[in-house]
Image (cartoon, rainbow, N blue to C red):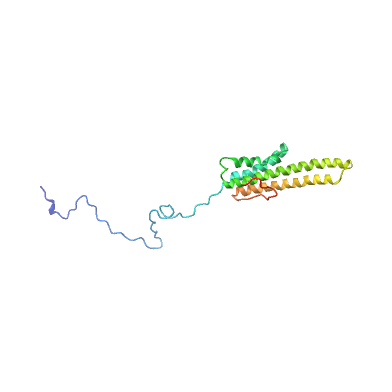
Length: 198
C-alpha cells in the first residue's frame, strides 16, 4: 500500500487553484464607474432611470369628438332636415355618458362645454326662428298699416342669431383643436351658457 503522506508537494484533487489578488477599478478617462448596489434608485435595480418618464397625456380623442360631433350635427343636420341647430348637444352628451368616459375629468370637461354650446345654440336657433317669423308677420302687418319698427326688430333678432351661430362654428373648431392638443378650454359664456358642469 502506498503512503501518500510523504508527498507533501502534491495537492489534493478537490482544492481549487489559488485566486490571484483583486485589482482595483481601472483608472483613466475611459474607465467605467462601478454599478450601484442592487435596489439603488427608484425601483430600478441598476440605479435611477436615465431620463424622467413621459408625462401622462389625457385622452384627447373623445374630448375632440365632443366638439366635432356638435359641429357636424349642427352643419349636417341643419343642411339636411333644418333641425341640426336644435340637436347639437346630443353627440357630446352621448360621449360624456359613455362608461369609459364618465369618470375622466378631461373628457367630462370638454363634453360639458360642448353640451352647453349645443343647448345655447338651440336657444339661439329658436330666437332666430322667432325673429324670422316675427319679421315676416310684422312686415305683413306693416303693409296693412301696422308699426314699422316690428319688422326691424324681428329681422334684427334673426341677424344677431345668425352671427352667433357662425361665430359658434368657429369656436367649435377651436375647441376641438384645443381638446386634441390636451388643453383645458372653455367656450365664452355668451356661446355656452353653464347648464351642465364638468
